[in-house]
Length: 441
Image (cartoon, rainbow, N blue to C red; front, side):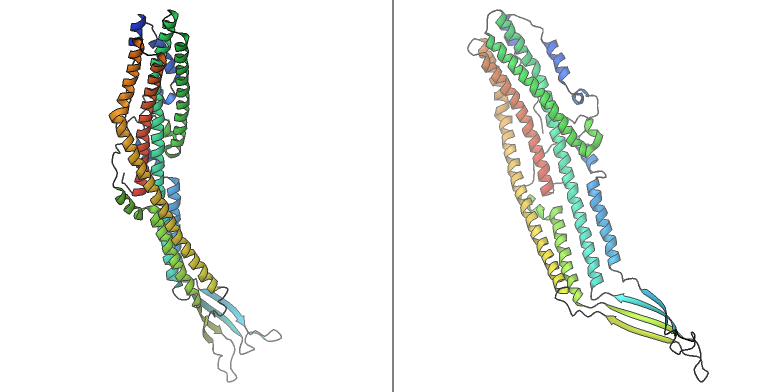
């Protein structure tokens, strides 16, 4: 993508032919220009920050994406834990010990007991818990991918915005000597009675306006660099590279629309729906009772009346829940899970509609910007420069006034700034389309 940075038509030679003056204004203009330049523009010896490098810096160890990936890893670990049996419990006790008289061997039922209890969750609770948590981990992974796309888009937009204000600042600085020449020459013409004071005032006014624009551009450039620093840190102090990326074509809208189905936001929404479906199945498992197996051993001391030692006891029992009161527990838990599933489905539809709307709008913007750039390339740039030259020639031959000259040069400056802005906006539009339509880097 080429950028037009041509210089303005020089008024000095033509106007000096009118007066015969050879005013030495270039040195003064250059001196003032240097004073207006920002440190970032003066640091031409610094290694330029390319867009590709900015992308790598932004994506390397990005904390937002890292946070989502860590959450995904945590959910995967929880999925493994959720599929395991609860830890068994051990029971140690003394049963039927006489408290009034006697000891451990006095009564036949006195026992030292040792028991183990293992609970088994009802139905497929463990398997479904693992499945749900795994699906939630996948959702977090897709969100991390989406975060990566958003970061890539943001750093591209910020880099391009910084590029615009740097270019606009430089274009305005390059134009200033010509406006300064006009001030000097109109003063000379007025001094010899060739022109009126209004021409001088108009030239001085336009020069002051240009100086104000240069100051504002410098401020906007600083703001753009500050926004870029969010993604590249201290590297934003480096001047951005002068060359724009060669983003001249995008796939057809139909292809980009199909690619929306694989957008990380949609895939994350799909995983969310799957997780809620598993949550519904998990809620249905609560109608199936949990059960537990108890195994106990009882040690007895002493002897039977016949002199034989008392036998030890072994016990085995099974316990299970009785889900009789389901109205305010199991039933409501299931209804809550069904509501969460419906909400997830509706959220997916909302996300898809929003992305489709953004894609349609951005694609139309891309096309419009392309048509406008083509018009600038074919007509506007050259006509704007020719108009400034023609106004100057008419003024030289006494067939035009100075207001037309100033208007021609101001319009030419604005045209070149608009052309650069269109190039940058088109590149920013490509960055948005790349995010939505999955255009590879």
